[in-house]
Image 1 (cartoon, rainbow, N blue to C red):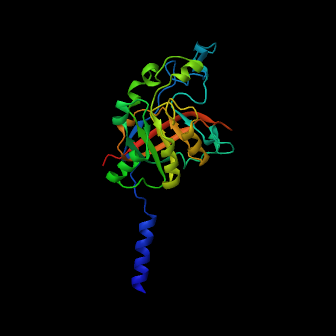
Image 2 (image 1 turned 90 degrees about the vertical axis):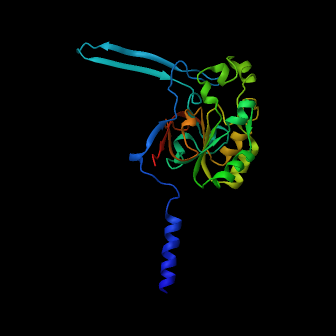
Image 3 (image 1 turned 45 degrees about the vertical axis):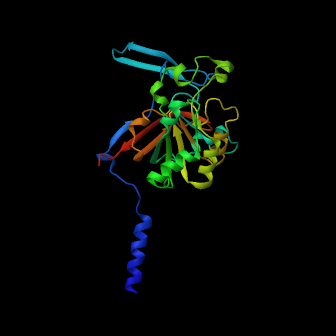
Length: 264
């Protein structure tokens, strides 16, 4: 009986203790967000950043005051794609829970194949190769892909593949993304909270059907796009907090995403 009780306690501790944990107070914060400005990159068919002055200067009351107004497309700069963006009836921005938008990251570096092919699509084999070295992607992870494209921000020609706008710009987009086969493999074989990368889209630039978006979003897996500074993150151990502007019924939103990295 005593042996049974002891064994039960060991099993309980094993299954209830987080695989990864660290103290935020002792960690280092990394900002993974690009500032919004006139340099912010947008999809060629989207409206761009507008920032207008309401008032700057001394008021009649004798004190200094500043106020501005801004407008922006949902999908531009560092932003979140909500599942409803490509899947009818799925979660909107305001329906995503904080738990879905926070958690330990798995960061997979695919910059080597991308360096030889800027239209590279990340494959199941890329994740499987990472797992051979590091073990299976833990359940509840936020999966981030470092393609190396962030080094070109905010140069539209280098980052997007074109400076053209409108339909002509869309036709000339060129950047890496997640292959639909990998999206389906993740849905079928892994339990992730969200996925993100340092490019303008989860699908590669030449996509016309955006199948990766469709597959992931049909399963309420949101996406983070134009994520900054992924080269500063370890492959395991960073804790992600990704909080978008809470837009009711939104299909996307500007995203402030940060990572806390343990120092030990």
